[in-house]
Amino acid sequence: MADFMKTQNSFADGQVDSEFFARDNINGLSLLENMDVIAGGGLTRRCGLASVATLRSDARLIPFSVSETEEYLLALTDGHLLIYSNGALVRDLLTPWGAGVAHCLQYAQRFGTMIFVHPDYQPRVLKKTGTTFTLSPFGFSRNDSDMTVNIPFMKFDDAADIKITVSAHSAGNNYATFTTDKSFWKQDNVNERVYLLGRQWVVTNYVSPTVVTAYTNGPYTLPSGPVYDWREAVFSKTRGWPCSISFHQDRLVFGGSRDWPAGVWMSQVGRHNNFNVGTGLDDEAIFITLLSQQRQQICTVVSSDNLQILTSVGEWAISSKPLTPSVVDIKQHTSVGSVASRYLPPQKVEGATVFISATKKDIRELTLDELSQTYNAKDLCALAKSLMNDPVDIAYNGDAHQLFVVMASGDMAVLNKNSALGISAWCTYKTQGKFKSVAVIGGETHVVVQRGATFFLEKFSRATNVDAGQYAFSFSAAALPLRTGGHNPRKIRVRKISARVLDTKSLFVNGMRVTLPNASYATGSTGYSGDVGINILGTHNDTMAPIWRLHGDEPLPVTVLSVTVDGWYSI
Image 1 (cartoon, rainbow, N blue to C red):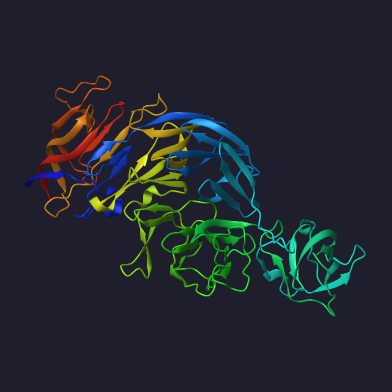
Image 2 (image 1 turned 90 degrees about the horizontal axis):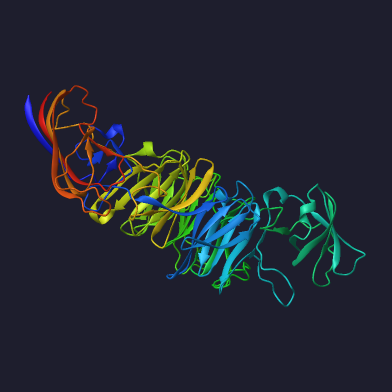
């Protein structure tokens, strides 16, 4: 037998999984629920949720920051885009996106304009001008000289061996009949564009799977035989629309489409509606396809120091500066992969790009090495993978140094991260209901919460210790199994457990209320700061169980700086 006194004054590693319980170098906990790890390494009860609005249905939250003083929160519901300012609904715009679409929409913002993309819908542009909000289709620019459209064209794989016979049409010299040697055309091809005989053509009429009529702006010369060299517009109702979007080096970037999932299209510099590659001048549009041994679907594109391209099987980067058609330095750096079934927006966290892996069990931090040549994808939840269970939304609050990850179960995993202070601590947030979505705007974290059959817009607030004005929530923190003297004890007898607290009004330790000297529980009063403890004369034979547990359910503040256990053990 040997006496011990062990103090834990840092909880910087947060909740960790049981496979790490035998390690001595972890400042963690076996459970951390509705508590955060603060900058000094201690614990504090999470703040409550303040009510903002009642929503018509489930919603996905998107931040829309026009300027430092003008910020809006978008709530995307079935067929509606709700725009909130300081908690007030300012506009309700109708959208073409039905049920089940919101979670796949991607977006990119530049000043007062946000562009939304989805592989099955023409991109839409949300624009704020003065006090007016509009949501309109995205259009490619036109050339006044010949009315052609600056949309990219390409040869799709399923049309590679199809030839077109061009014949005159009675409607006039600008019309022609296109006849393919295989079934190819659909009714949806009407009003879509093809590039043939060095010209753009608009399909005007569908006749059959092998015959359509088309129009071009100007006379043409009939070819002497079938035409093999022809291309289709990359984006259309037939071929689908962009899957992902970003702005990079003053170019609009589309990553992947429904029918060409590994393509990257970059607009001309400063002309974001113009995707004409022209003659390859430095400011003209760029098109590349990711080539690898595996079939890749681009999940999202991220503008950082480089243009990062996250696919279903790996992470690529284009490091060219400036980025021009003649200089595209692209390579695959890591092979983690991202979620393709829904949009989980990568977050900028302390200069790194943080994304959820394709397995939905990892959250990765994409960073450059010291020479800024190669990216690494560090696993941020390596110690707490049990908390990752089908994530459905993610957001980062830089002011609070917190990464929020909403799970399909309705719980939320929260990472308190401050690399400068050595904090990287996961915990779980729960409420009476289910978290559905999360977004950060103006330094405030907003959530959609389902309570019963109703959906609410709420935000975390230090001004309240309850959720939505009425729901109390419990908190818990439990120690790792005791290791002392480098040993795993066989039997433990505890004499006393004490805690050093800060401005605390209520605390339970191992089920017993701790007496807080001179602490008043009146609303707004200052709590007790100092040391408190409980005497426990008990023997623990289950040495895998936590030696102490802090908990409570009163709507009162709690901050714990350290916990000390005094007793003896045998091995």
